[in-house]
Image (cartoon, rainbow, N blue to C red):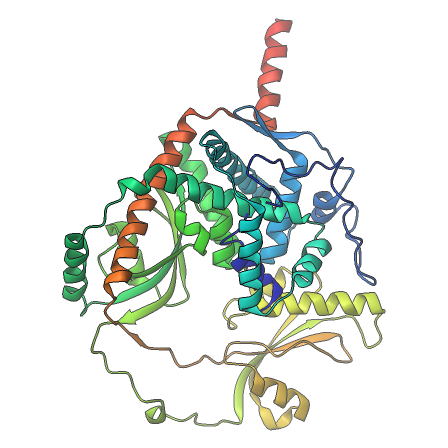
Length: 481
């Protein structure tokens, strides 16, 4: 598992270098100096969005106030940097404002949740965080040094990373504290659900993930729809769905990257079910208006009805000509003898790109967003015409994936296989009673959590710096008149 994928998984259980949720995010006046960029890395130009995010001399004023609790510009910059570091989204002048606005909205929601946790005297201890970290590190054979290095390169304080984790844990504890004793899953309810599942075993099922944002009043509808469209655009540009879900989804499934598990055809509300019926495995659809807000759906896998015969791989038709394969080429043109720093940066960019490649359908669009990168459709290539080294690299890449980056006389390159693997066929299997009980519990808690957050937002006093500026301007104008 890569460090970035580890970070995405880490955000699912996450919580602050805070001993409790009462602690504040680090202030730029007291936080440690950010680690210097590694030797050979190029600093962002003074006018780039990256430079604006990372600029230690940028405004350290107030980005928003939530019930008298301040979200500083520093907090916001740190979280934008964390988002970019963990998703691989490339900031530019066109999308940075939208990303910043989305993250500020999420910070406001998060602050509402943390303040409610404080009101209920709920804390998240550092020992809880450390245990979660150690478990994930062990499961994924990673070291803390790898994680720290990625964050340091993005100039993200570890406390910022842990703060987001703590807020998620605190909110989960708060919802459980408020509603756990109100959720009752009776044996009769489990048996009834099992009967429904059994009756629907001959229907398709879907392994699906969601991103949800609520519309609490009609006036919010256009802005929420616009926000969700922006999230969809980021996902289609290469941002991982689970990372976006953890950052922005308002359902409890956010902690698991939006994962809803397996749902039966007809189980979701009609608007969502109708969308699922038309989707293909790997597709993202939305924004879909339903159940109090807007959804994005990600179909991870379509599951065929019980009893479906799965073809034996040995019976599948062999490739007519195994020496021919459709390929694409991605080039970062830095010449045959680049400076060490330029070569290192090109390799880093190629590694990030490789992590987001999933076939050639959107590859050209993805490469077009990388300044200076070049895309070539090689068509069907005779593998015998390629060098032994490239043939060997291609043989190690699965269908739809890329070779590892390599240096050529033209620069740093990737060769991408444009063939597609035979579709994986999964057949439905009956869940256990424990599985059904857990699903029913999560469904009820999701309803309670949405209602809880909706009620908190309705009474919250939230004001952004932009809104405060407009209010002050109107006040000044009125006093002049």
